[in-house]
Image (cartoon, rainbow, N blue to C red; front, top):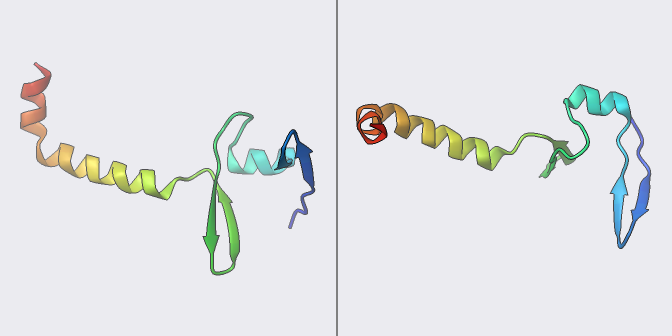
Length: 74
């Protein structure tokens, strides 16, 4: 477990993540992370569940309408 300290950043408050945590999450400065409330508390993740659901739906449609999309691409 890593303890983090809140830091004042302008009119906001920020958290500084240790280098090891950033490496484990495969994050770098400027990346976006998402905060999700879970029954156990709060989860910080680089994964956007809503976007992933939208992409899964898009992949299904592209697979089903493959021929039509090829014709439109011509």
